[in-house]
Length: 426
Image 1 (tube, rainbow, N blue to C red):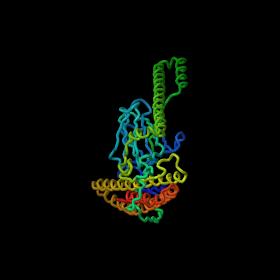
Image 2 (cartoon, rainbow, N blue to C red):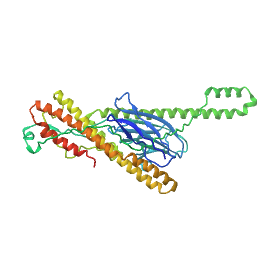
Image 3 (spheres, one colour):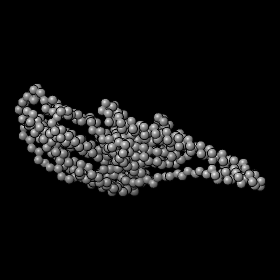
């Protein structure tokens, strides 16, 4: 089995991410669907894809281009009639579906998956209809939402700024980050779409045939055939008209939903309830703030009315916090995915000797490629913690201007120590 490494830029370093759900079945050739920018909603991702699925077949797709901080809506619908399409989402491997839905039980005949994932999202589509079914996939990814880390800052008052010698300590964070590389195995294969052409007749051809029959008695026996052809053509045109109307209705329904979703994501009051409707496909992504996070007294407890030095340093401070969260999620997701892939391969290869021999070779490649993962994580963690410490020192300058002379030694270093332990590799 062949593997390929995909190198992308993340945090200004080269990073390797895995692709579609894992499989040892070489007959599964999934098509990649890559989200593009949405001109109507800057920062959001969008994709439209259309294909036809023959009866009693399975088609595989995987979605790329989304971020773990984006909330993804996947819409799947038949473009004509009311055939029953079944769709399932998978992440770790194609065999184990996480969510399954069908068009027959979905509102307006449109399947809607609402999910969040660090990994690529696998989509498996099947149909039991007696005829090929043209269908559409429309995907929307929200603008990145980073709101689960609550602010650690509280208003500085006498009670929480009273001197406490036990908190004061020397602190030096001189470790500097160096470029690093994640190594994870991914599978990238393309599926050649099955396209079904549609046949139709021109009305003028039928009229010409009727004219010829009317002037040639010897062909009068063919009149019934001509009428049948005309009737079938009219039925075909009517079906095409109904199909167009239905497709237009479902397409507009989806686009209205996407417009409402993206608008709601920009409304703070609706954000919390909206996010609750989305299912995490990865257990490795945190959705709650770190437990036992210390509170930091500050003369600028909120953003309103803060001096520029507070605003600038606080913005960098929050960016680094979310980068540390993402770093930990990448490590956890990578570890989970790799363990799952190895267990899946070990189990599947045991049924066939030849497959087992091939798998052992590929298994060694996987183990070799992830051997430096722990070291890479530690190096990047030190780099980000060093930047976090620098922003705390910047905040210390601001706090000194407003009366807390030893803010860093008393409060900044306390928070740094918490973060250093919080993102220590377990």
